[in-house]
Image (cartoon, rainbow, N blue to C red):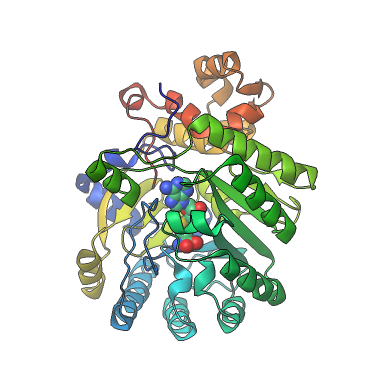
Length: 433
Ligand SMILES: C[S@@+](CC[C@H](N)C(=O)[O-])C[C@H]1O[C@@H](n2cnc3c(N)ncnc32)[C@H](O)[C@@H]1O
């Protein structure tokens, strides 16, 4: 297999993969909503699909050139959807453990728009007792009053899309912000006193060299974020980079996977030397006893996740689902008082075991006891062939009492996961989302 960054998805976000989800399962999803709740933790995801600009590597459902009236209609749509969902037997009366505002760019909204949105959703879902409320921000959309307002609205974990500190690289990749905006926002963020501030970086953006990457890492380290997330650039088919390359006939010049892994390895070493702990194949945290990422950990361990917004992905009572992916379809459904479900899938118990095994492996160490208790199957035995392969490839540091990946394995974890898929899916691999 080529090591170059070919167009296609690399990141494994879920299992079974999204191409297996279909409209025929919508009644199953509706049935899950209408049934009594499970005792799994409950989280809430809100998708805010607006951005100042579309990044050339972005593969999410986002809209640019948005008018205030669009934001207003969408925000009312989210509030309507929250009311519909909160009234369902599987959700009614349950306490939210975590909330995640993702995008798109949630910080695209003005303070007024944010306050209105939060008031609208709060009418159905309070989150004063939630352990974590994450909010994704693009640096150039932030102002001091907006950051203060976010803290007052209950945000506990602010996630800042820095991606890189080099202005030429930021521009070449279609980012809406430049480095000066990161530094300006950082002062306000520190002053606001969020319990957890995360920085997102991407290794291998177009134009990146070892030198520019090392500079970005040193500048990030100087900020001392509570946590750092590093993704390796992938080129899903629906990105501007892939469309442009198709038209011009010239491939997008992105570093190969080996180079990107070396860059992330360097970043991990630098941060570990500064006292950070590795908390997954993508994340380092400054103080593991204090800094948590509930959304990731609860979702990866099979929590329920109610998903609000266009194209959002959710999981309820063991059933996967996705909302309508088109603006009008989504809004007309919620405006009619209906759940806007587009497709779904009820995984088998074996598929859920695979899901939690591969998502768990992204953390670098499998929680065998938890999986054995939940599924009645020992994943060390059930996947003996896969563990043997990983060991032979230098990706497994230990098998018992629980599988632990080597640094090499951890930095390429997504490419290791398709071998755990059931046979009919192995050739297809993972699909990001
Ligand atoms: C859903 S995006 C939202 C970012 C937010 N709009 C901002 O401007 O900061 C969340 C993160 O996904 C990562 N990401 C997006 N596209 C990617 C790609 N093609 N490859 C790797 N990481 C990607 C980026 O690090 C980004 O911060």
